[in-house]
Amino acid sequence: MEAYKQEFIEFMVDSQVLKFGEFTLKSGRKSPFFMNAGAYVTGSQLKRLGEYYAKAIHNTYGDDFDLLFGPAYKGIPISVVTAIAYSELYGKEVRYCSDRKEEKDHGADKGSFLGSKPKDGDRVIMIEDVTTSGKSMEETVPKVMGAAKVEIVGLMVSLNRMEVGMGGEKSALDEIKEKYGFEANAIVTMKEVVDYLYNKPYKGQTYIDDEIKAAIDKYYETYGV
Image 1 (cartoon, helix red, strand yellow):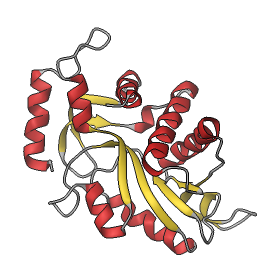
Image 2 (image 1 turned 180 degrees about the vertical axis):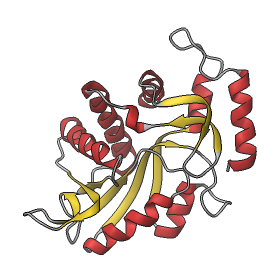
Image 3 (image 1 turned 90 degrees about the vertical axis):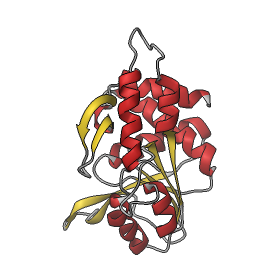
Image 4 (image 1 turned 60 degrees about the vertical axis):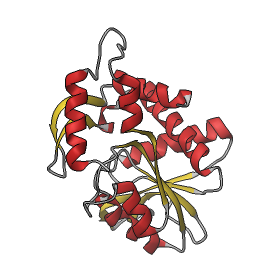
């Protein structure tokens, strides 16, 4: 496992973004783990988050893209900090864009987008916190594709939960690739998280012990791919 992935897993735990227990997801599923990117709240946390996304995007997709699109609401700060990190780490200026939940009907920036609106010829990378079912892409991909003649290069999320999407057979990320034709990847997968943290004390605490591991295994018997 790459060093930045190990660091990112520790970073999620330190930031209390990744938690273990019993949680009800937006999809209605009862999960033994939960990731909430809204818990990144400090300047240093957001700076590091952008750096991890930038490294993952650079390693996965290279530098041939123009626009980072982060769906509202959590995708807004992620796209902003990643654009900043990309400039600092790789010397490449990329624009950011997000959708508005309600269209703005006044001012010079009125419309459906926040930041830099997609332009004809743009190569776009979608950026999200986590995709459980892939439902968010149903809402945002048509917006991006309808705004200009763009090419969506791929999607980057922070954690691949490695569970079935809305179709009930393939993973949400695989469903996105099949439906929209672009790659969908993550900084880390849940398997990498489990492999790294299982029965391994981190800062005096074992986050995935035998009990949590058994709950995760049982969850994946139902929802895993």
